[in-house]
Length: 171
Image 1 (tube, rainbow, N blue to C red):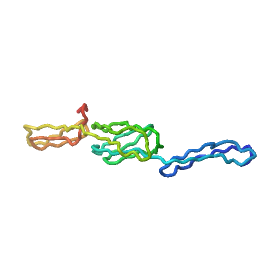
Image 2 (image 1 turned 90 degrees about the vertical axis):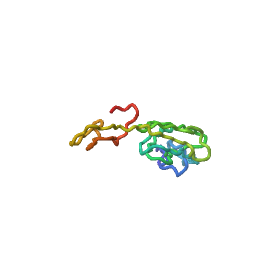
Image 3 (image 1 turned 180 degrees about the vertical axis):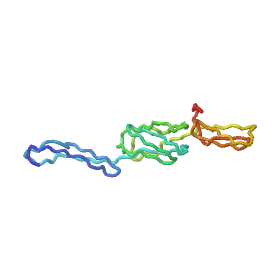
Image 4 (image 1 turned 180 degrees about the horizontal axis):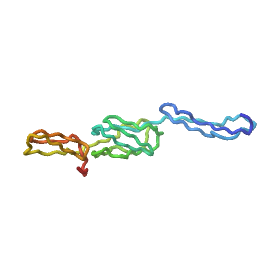
């Protein structure tokens, strides 16, 4: 670069499992070579754990400003790595429909290893809607649930809609 030109050095992509930071990353070129740019890389760790009880209903978890959407039981991990000594605090950003979820081991300080002991446990609190038909003649009967689901009933007896409703949902 010619004298008087400005420069700015940035990190294009972080190496896997590390966070690199730059010091003295920008300035103006004068008559000397620039030799004081410092790049320091440190091992970083993930924050995650296990979810159970979801029944394919999406839950949104939050750690700092990152929101992670998960819809299956099993292991989860936030994409943003954290440096040792930094705090983490995982919360439920959005509960899954009709479920009540709780978190154990949700906060702490990053040590020199990945956090894998956060446990999200969900309980399905949805309910079935149904009843009993009596006195039905030879014609079939169609019943609707919230204009979304139709059941055709051809004989007297019990019926149940497939759709499950959350507590306090209208039907």
